Image (cartoon, rainbow, N blue to C red; front, side, top):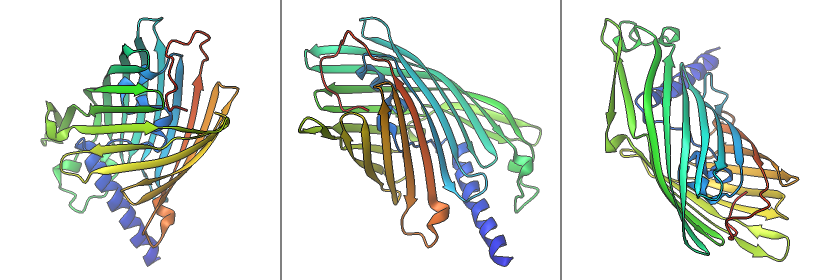
Length: 316
């Protein structure tokens, strides 16, 4: 009984800390299989495709804790003829503790042909976010704390991401900035108020790159990496190594500097439907069960008979 109460208290503390970061704008979703649909990180990466494509990603973290982080994102890209312009909707819903947020936006990317084998794209994601907090469901140490005196209902926030993305045969690299607009909200005693601000210290900076090497007619290896920097937080690095057989079956392993190991696999059916799964395993914990995570990826690729980009970019 005592152990269960202690476990519950620890879990509530961890989720509450994550929730505080979430409310202050410092927490942002992190997907393990971002490289399978890189536009969920960098809107400019959408320009490396010449076909209609999209994905839905489901991510559950800290399995075993009550109200642990849950993320669901849908992302679609549509090329506008041969103009080099790409458009598509992007929808994200996440829940952390007693807080939840829905983000609805649109990706815009424009591709510039540097020469036959080298391309540069620029991207923008504009969105509106709506956040809610069920603070009345919490049990704070100090019941008189004004931060927990009322719920947060339907507070909205504009947001944008901007990025650039370069790609050529067997290689790509991109940089983007997100979380540009931050909504700070608090309770004044007579109701919840908020302030939308722009501050470089609140922004999230990403550097993403990938490379591929062919081995015979059937195999490719596709190492890639993602660096994420948030001022005031440690630099986070994802290093991934993936192998692909006949452009159908893929599998790999990743290491994240948050002391996490990720095992992943994916399968492409009829060059159209892409199914992926990733298992996150926390390292260095006495009980790893509560530090695991699961991610499911479901994507589609509409084949284009008229290939516009004559390069083989590392993509899934």
